[in-house]
Figure 1 (tube, rainbow, N blue to C red):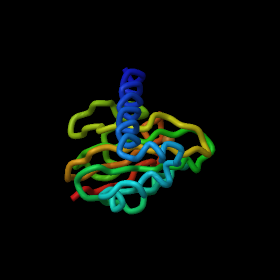
Figure 2 (figure 1 turned 90 degrees about the vertical axis):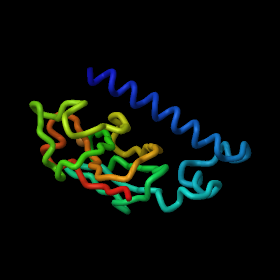
Figure 3 (figure 1 turned 60 degrees about the vertical axis):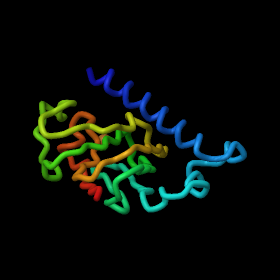
Figure 4 (figure 1 turned 120 degrees about the horizontal axis):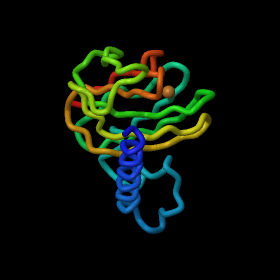
Length: 156
Ligand SMILES: [Cu+2]
């Protein structure tokens, strides 16, 4: 079940990324993720940078306005991590666990999308449309949420 969720997330990511690339000129086809926002308007204030490591999630800024939000996340740890965008009013770190991780789906939360587990030392991006509300940005690999890999994010 988790495997299918991951695949769905990866597919959505690909679609979102392709859509993002289509917004820029063909001439920008070779540009990196870092420069992609230069060619478009309206997404600059919703560009979020962050890191994953053992055992925390850090993003800056930790808020955005409703609409398209782009997360650029580096795995600064020594092992693989994943990055989930979870819409929930549950307090930071308080999502009830089913064993060593929380179930997807779970009552009181919605996993909007995710970057599936990616290796230490690499950076991935995820663009998605977010509604106003309270979010947690988490890693839900076994034991990682309980160990501290979660932070709050607010969309207004
Ligand atoms: Cu992790």
